[in-house]
Image (cartoon, rainbow, N blue to C red):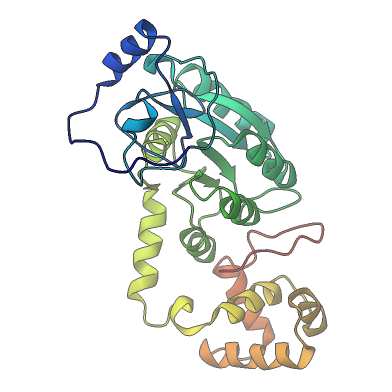
Length: 302
């Protein structure tokens, strides 16, 4: 089906309630189906998967979207629309609490849950939820890897990260990861979780006070690692902090041991540190060793 030759007149569209009534009263009316992540229009009603356009095909505005397909659809009343959520959290008790409050108190629909990063990617790509609650520390793949993989496939996905780690480097990686919110599990309450989910589901962002304070401190410090170290140097510093040798780091990052040694020397010089023991201490103190990827999964460094 092709787009019309000219855009329709600028007459005001139907309100959601009027559109829903019209669809019920005119069963022969054509409903053009667009995936909700591709098109946003005020003249529609929401169900959990699609925007349903209550217009004949000739009335569709030019350039709004390409018709993906035309199907029979059971229209859901706007009051029944619920945000779909996947929960990724490796602590069973915390995951159960989050699931319960999201379902019974916050009004969301939990369509999947897991304690595994690998399974999280599969669940997210299968269910394509509106929001993912994502813990950073997982047994098989860290939350940064999960976010990186799913956002490449579903760039419109909204992600709220959770962590008990609020060190400088972890929060820096959160900032650069492209997620839409972060709250720390040590100092934030369920009310904060409610506010964060509401903001993210509505297309806004929500970052905890600890995150904002750390970001301001990094940006105001002329000697901050974000200003003196390159991406490669930060990646190597993280692995040095974990106790890996030059050979092991080179194998992990596909670099020669000699190149890793050169990076190590440059990091020491830029941070004004003397010797590898102090470099390891710096990495630990600033959180470069906190969120690690296990079982051979290579972390995403940004």
